[in-house]
Image (cartoon, rainbow, N blue to C red; front, top):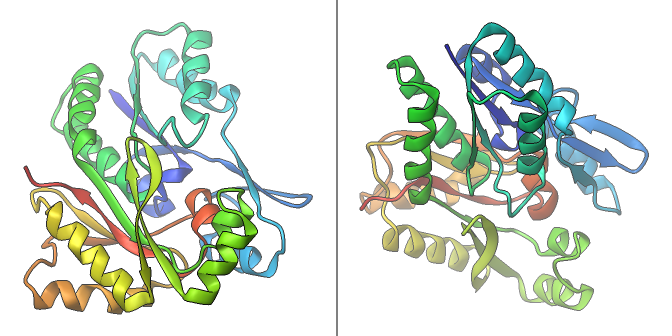
Length: 280
């Protein structure tokens, strides 16, 4: 049997993960002296409420090697294989923790994949791995196919405010303040495993227009599911999806994914975007 393992940065709905037999290793979120485990005792709703109420940014920490070792030892004891698809190594030390756990476990049938992406981008890869598992492929073959597909994963999103990038030390207070004054809305992408700003627009309407331009330049492959991404407000879909429908580019296999604490810590509320596989 092949076990599929990921981490909570994939933002899976717990019920979906359980139904698809996906093990999710949680990340820790710290708000001051209060510590939570993403997806376990901290919902996205509560997270965004705490984020907006707090004056200091929360901190996130990757799972320890021990957290992974438990799952690896279980697979080893059962004689199962494990395909482990994790948050981009550029964004977190989660991958390193899993590699250490694999060495500790001393079991060769554990296949670790650096997704080079996050949130729904990870979901696309994990769901693909589940599909391959259910078709009877070995762990090694599944990992190899996921390695190929990950190069085509695209995430583009509009951030509503620069404040949370400032809190996380990514911007100076002056830059964030300038963004608030000018209503600057950055377009971000997950590129080469890291988050990059790929555009800056004045106002949300212009930002959505730029987002659509990015989607046009990097078209969706409808052979795979696509995801509308949002942080705290699913209603933000009204800013983008009707426009895509109008121009005939709305993905046919569209799902929704709320951005959880791991990425939400840095981009804050009000974000919207798309995660998908790019058409060749």
